[in-house]
Image (tube, rainbow, N blue to C red; front, side, top):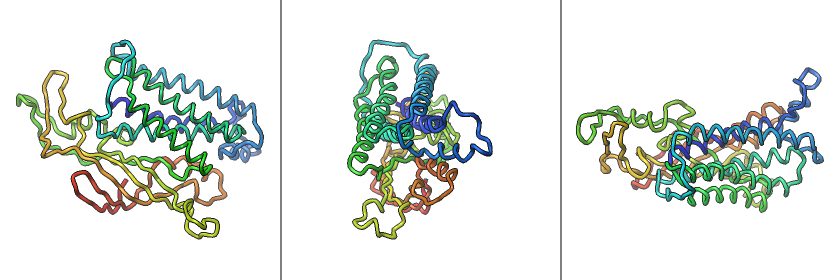
Length: 347
């Protein structure tokens, strides 16, 4: 479900922006030369030494307001133009080569991770913050599923909820086992060079191109590509190597260097198949031998920006904000077509 997939990535990005609001005391005055150091300290997301009611209500109030606003915006943007029906389900496990499911895993992990940091910033103890973040993260993602369930165009997806649970479980298990996120979820993507070769409708009366199809389906801007271009996106599990070393305390291995495993897909121009119908009823269908739908698996290096040593708080905050994006790096690809490729630089 294209709309749903784009929503999840959009919500993940908005959650990160929301956390920026969490980090600032909304009752504080604008920083002056005297108060600037304290403001920067707030922005660094350092947990309060004790539970701080002022921070807690700032987080709760801002979070509730933004969540409500986002829910209304999502409904107006994606659902109001489609008829409502009774709550129903839809089996979408086979759509988009499961790229949308990778989106669910990424988005729920991201939501839990950032809500946890916001909760810890209030001074909430680790265990309470942990279960709060899992509940809020699952609640945010479940909102989308409930909306889908009442929309005639879509439906409640058990598969989506399953991958939401996997995302929350990935976050939860790491906090319980290691008290840190040694495996981080990230994304990357650059729009492919879509073909300009003419494609004819089945009755031969209309011409389009793959570039036009992709533009209409996914969009063309950087944010469109990063949010919902299935042929461009790679979803990564980025593993911190240093954290798994047996003698990591004495090791000189860089703490910021990660090994990343990625998943992507190619030749996706429709949900279940590369066949679509225009608004005027004309049908286009791609030759499956020429445009086979396939999966991509990657192995690459990455950077954990939160582990970069720096004493500058503003730089630390900026680096942490980038940590949901995989850095461009050489990558080894194997795909379901049986081909292996070495990319000098992949993003």
